[in-house]
Image (cartoon, rainbow, N blue to C red; front, side, top):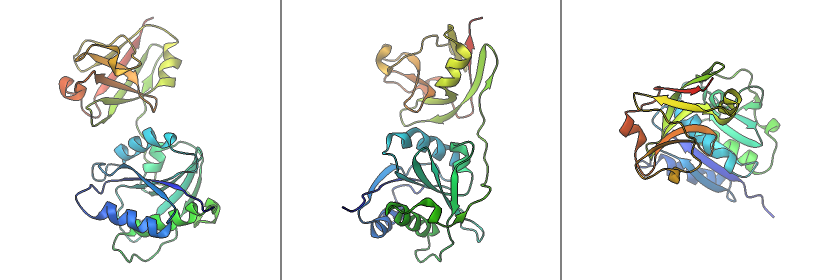
Length: 259
């Protein structure tokens, strides 16, 4: 029975042009049995931080062994390269522009894809079809290209913690105008140790209760919860939190625990 790999796509191509469709067509030629799934083609142009967050929020829900292609900020310079990596049971094929180091810390198996002449005018298509065809047929990552060596590093700002405070920032505003904060559940629990808390942002009254669902509060009321990826999120039940509170990316959010 043929292998039917799952391939996800995250790009800054948009949907009004042919780029996303051309990439899908090329992938299906290279890997006819593949199931190609869109995560998003609406990443803001060149915004690798947004791309990293979107994929980070989604990839763990895919089957283990899935191949995740991230086509964001692909600078087509002569020395530009694409890399493939394996992390947490998934494969990632990305431009070497820092997006991978935003997603994962520490050691992972990486390979630099061989440079191939671009027949389509979009080198990302050649790189992705090469890697997807190889990995999708069950061949090992170790046989794809050469060891990547050091990757371009982009260190995402992490929250600052003290005994009673976590100082983070808004890192993403989603389609529903919810504000995602770079504070993970494990950090919140490690610092908080079950203590009462208040979440401060802008000049709004603090939120002092952690919700499990958006509907835990009345319609139009603010709340905070940990989303499916484990990040703190500020939201409004059936409302638009970022607009209502004037929240933007890089705005400070502080969690203060009771002494």
